Amino acid sequence: MRSTAGEHYPALDHLRALAALMVFCWHFLHFTNGYPVPFGQAAAFLALFPLALLDEGHVGVSLFMTLSGYLFAKLLDGKNISYPRFLFNRALRLLPLLLFVVALELIFALFSAAPGAEVKNQLLALARGLVFPSLPHGGWSITVEWHFYLLLPLLLLLARKSLWNMALVLACAILTRYLWHREYGEVQNLAYFTIIGRIDQFVLGMLACHLPRRILRPTTGDVGVGVAALAFCIFYWMFDARGGFMRSPGYPSGNPLWIVMGSVEGVFFALFIAWYDRREPCAPQRNRNSRAGSGVSLFLARIGEYSYSIYLLHMFFVFHAARFIHERIMDISHFLVALPWALLCFLLMLPLARLSHHCIELPFMQWRKPYIIEREKPAGSPDRSMEKRP
View 1: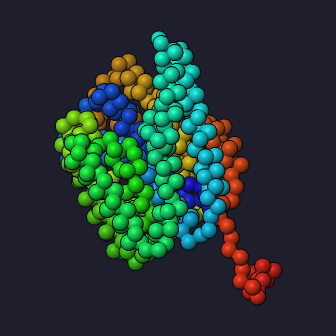
View 2 (view 1 turned 180 degrees about the horizontal axis):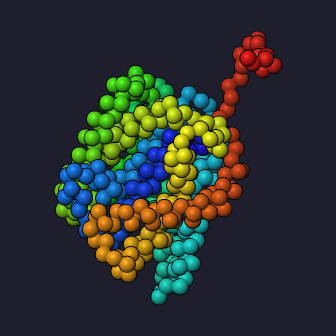
View 3 (view 1 turned 90 degrees about the vertical axis):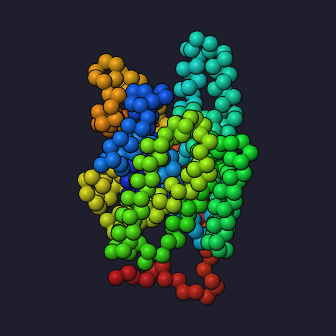
């Protein structure tokens, strides 16, 4: 993950790669109401309970959201920024590929059975996508990201005054979802697809950037994060066993768990991100081509760099790939049989994601402008810029 300031965070790229893999597996395994793999099969294998995070791979979106909160707190906390330039840079980062995906959808609509109606629906979805989760191919999450960017100056100000203000934001979000659930009998869609549900993860990611280092020190910190990871995997295994995203008992679910689902996910991911980012082998680098780290680390970091392209483009292919393998090659209706195929297809998509990253994303990113405003030096302070460094 590379910032406008030029710093590259390989640890955060590793986590973006993990998030992209989880989302990819979710769609490959279950894309049409549990086809080709019926929902909840991973829950049958108690010894493999961490695999529930792939069986319920939608949780990868939560990791993406928490990462965003953590990264922007890491980059911007305590600094003066030009907010218009910040938004300009984010537009250059996100909109070119998103508009490319929307354009492809419009082209496909022209060749549909009812092109006029389909094009109208796509244009309507594009217009509504500024507010509602209607953009195609996962584009709804970009809408949520933009809502976070609009709130970011306020959140940074609240955090600067007192971190307890952030706890108040969380409490207000949970209360809103509680009242929505009491009024309408379900809150799953609001919790999953909108900023009202996702704000918890952004805020918790921001808070994780302020975690004291003593909490994550190598000895007790590793044990604490390990216990938290075990508890989270067990929680998701139980969630998967009781119906998961689609069968609790139906969709959308009236399960009140969705009132706090985003909070539970955000707490764990925030802790995990802060712990992983502060590991010594993953220290930030100024040069993205630095050879520091192992070959595996560099490979995972590359996947993380391509994760946005993987995320928006994979839905053009993933469903067809799963159907083709299941109907033409072999039966993959068993979770443990389908999962290796999902991993293989994920790897096969990397060349396309790399092409997209270099041809669609990077050219526009060259136009980004620095948005961090350097504070002026106090009058009379010595100028040490010409002093020799040891």
